[in-house]
Length: 133
Image (cartoon, rainbow, N blue to C red):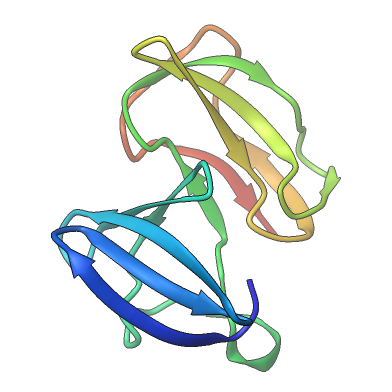
């Protein structure tokens, strides 16, 4: 995403972030240890506190090791398999909930170690869908 230059709370659940001179609007919901963030057409979920335990990548960046279902949904298609090398933003699985398509995208480059679920399967919110090595 780049370096964050400024963060401004502009309302209940609405935050503006300046990144590389560009202002982005993010919508945030949930308690501090389980935030849901909607940004640029995508949903991110997790514990975004600075002291949250997470795997650290190069230069101290937090990296995601699993992807979970954002809400109860049905798996429509599975686009990846264990052992597949994936790139950031690649759709790994497509879910459907409340007549909305929810693409599950790779948070970064990596290798898929496991896919949990099959096409047509109902999954609960928080169900682990994809694991990375």
